[in-house]
Every structure is written in C-alpha cells, then in structure tokens.
Length: 299
Image (cartoon, rainbow, N blue to C red; front, side, top):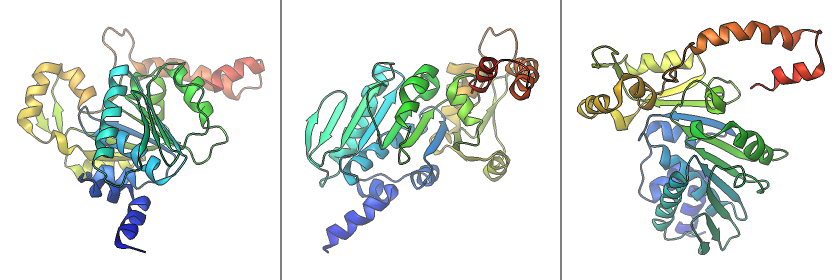
C-alpha cells in the first residue's frame, strides 16, 4: 500500500483528520462530535459559532468514503440551503483526490462512486421521497416546522439503523422538536455559547463562570458544553448586545431558549398547569385509547 493509500485509509476512518487534510483545524467541540458514534446528535450553537463547518463536512466526508451513500442536508430556508451547498463545494474543491462529480446542480451533487449529496430547503415536498439515507443534517433546525420532522425526516430513519441524524441550530423559543430534543436524553447533546452574560437593565456584559464550572454544571444534565472560540472578543460581543438587546443576545449568543415577546404566560407556568393532567391521562386506565395516544404523541 502506498503512502497516499495509507493516508486515505486514515482519513476515511477519521472525519477530524480528513478536515485537517483539507486545511481546517476543528475546535475541541467539533472534534468531539465529529468523532462520535451516536446516531442522534443535537448541536445548540451560538450564531456564527461554527455550525456550517459540521453541516458541510459530514456529508462531504460520507459521500467520498462510503460509495453509493446518500447524504441529505435540509435547511430552514432556501438561502441557507444555498449557503450549505456552497460550503460543501468549498470542501470538495480543497480535496485533490475527491471523486469526480458527474452532476452538480443547485440542490444535488452526484459522484462517480455512486454517492449523492442532496441539499434542499425544508419543505414537506422536498423532505419526502428519499429512502435509506446514510446521513441527514437539519440546519437551523429550530426554525423548521415540526411536521417536516414527523412526516419527512423521521420516516426515512425507519428500518435504517446506520442513518445518522444531526440537528444543528441556535434556539428559537421553548417549543418545537429542536427544544424537545435538547431536553431529551435520547439525544447526544452539545452546547456551544458565548462566555459572556448580559444584564437586562444595564445591557452590560459580564464574564460568565469559568469554563470548567460551566461544563460541570451542564454535564450533570447530560450535556457536553463549551465556550465558543468565535465569541471570545469582548468588544465584538459588547457591540452585538447593542444591536440585539438582552433577550435576543441570550438566545442567539448564549444558547438560551427564551420566552417569546408578547407571551402572556411563561413556559414553566404552562407546563406546570398542563403536566399533571397529561401525566394522569398517560398512566390512568380511564379514558379511550385515542385520548392516551394523543398524550403519548405530544413529544
């Protein structure tokens, strides 16, 4: 086996080393999740925190090293889908030994090895039809409607144990499948945020707790957490708070699932009112099977 063949074998086994081979040095949190064997991963990452790197690298690597594989990237908007495709093509262009593309359109890359990468906005029509994908990436997943997950994405995972589902986003309120996944132990969860807190009244940024304490606190909840290397500059973040305001800063940069503006009741109050009734219906022998199914399917 030649040296190049040995290197290619190593790159096929490590997404991290493959990224380095084409000129990218992943952050620690990216190294961790790119090396994971979990089939369900959720990345809750601050805006401009490095989400697009993971969104693009995984399908790029899979298509090259797993011939005849299908990778699907579905984004919240058509513009975001276009940006994801652009990033994938950037990675491909930096790999001189990447398989030849036999087709390259706005939403589809086909390779000579039989692999395909599909990049589409998250509509009900576009999310249907594909079977047995090897990889599914949902970009800005918090802004994708629940029905896309229920009727489009989830059926593609049926009887498909090798399928890897990665959902990536900043938060968008405390509702929807992204929020539920971040609070579910069924998922391998990652949190990457700004290291600065913000005060509501003064709009002043303060240094948050040490990263070790921050990581330990989230580890108790089963979440792997890091401070974002892209958000370390205090002047940049102080400027961002002037544009965003405290609420949006906490959501966009601190990864918090905040209450929506104008909401009369807080989410915790709503959950406290509804949960006892739901739990009683869920476990009670009283009620129809349809009633119980309704509750069981809420998540």
